[in-house]
Amino acid sequence: MMTFTEQLQNAWAQQNSLLTLGLDPDPRRFPPHLQHSKTAIFDFCTGIVDACAPYVSAFKPQIAYFASSQAESQLEALCAYIKDKYPTLPIILDAKRGDIGSTARHYAIEAFVRYGADAVTVNPYMGTDSIEPYFEWPDKGVIILCRTSNPGGSDLQFMTLADGTPLYLHVAKLAAKKWNTHGQCGLVVGATFPNEIAKVREVVGDMPLLVPGIGAQGGDIPATVKAGLTAQGTGMMINSSRAILYASAKEDWQQAAAQVAQSTRDAINAARAAIY
Ligand SMILES: O=C(O)c1cc(=O)[nH]c(=O)n1[C@@H]1O[C@H](COP(=O)(O)O)[C@@H](O)[C@H]1O
Image (cartoon, rainbow, N blue to C red; front, side, top):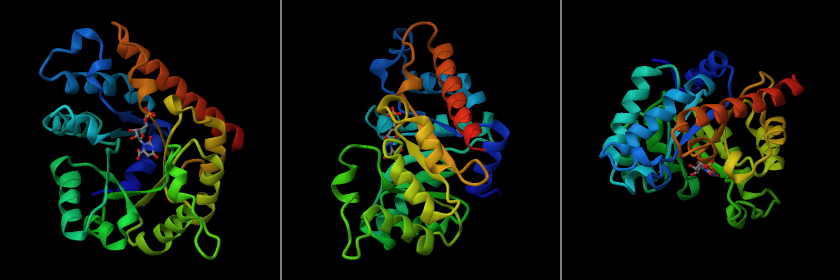
């Protein structure tokens, strides 16, 4: 079996894309003809996945959007659909879980066994023992919150330790030096903070970065790419969700989503080309 990072590297090259498609299905924003079916969430997400697959290198379903609609079975079906139709494109389950080890083990089973995800996002603020259970799956990706894209991300993550290191950089160092024993760790660093992306890149070598915050949150693509690219010209899963998913709520919803995915991929690739 391929590891998450091998899968990711292959997908970056095969697709010539660093774009991750975020799957955050909000039924109120679906095209009206899809809204009333019992499988609306599955139908919408698979429609978007099929339209956008040529332009992306990973999929990131956000679990809260499914759970809040009692649609976990549709998330299971969606993950199975992606595995079957796009087996080379990794699934990152965005769950941001964090809990004591015995409970975290169940979150890991949920992500890797129930949904068959290739990677999961986790919250590291309960410490080492809260993320260790995920490492019992040595091939799976564990993507750790570091410098999140939201405005409140600065409240705690930007506080400085006694030696002057900001907390988010301390997390990056722990991830690179202590937690990355299987080489399958990644870090979340928001596109809304390109300066911090560059600082994280300096301390973590080629570790993959999940970078949400372009599109609906207004992050700057060239600045983001410049700050986070590795020497190989890859190293980033740049996520966009709402700007692609809800490009149109009319009959052209799939074409409109594909168009935004394509132009986002192209903008990222133009920024890569300007550097290498
Ligand atoms: O872990 C994440 O994916 C995440 C971390 C972060 O710092 N900021 C952030 O926006 N996200 C997620 O990334 C997605 C961003 O969605 P859009 O703003 O619609 O592109 C959402 O699913 C968020 O939950």
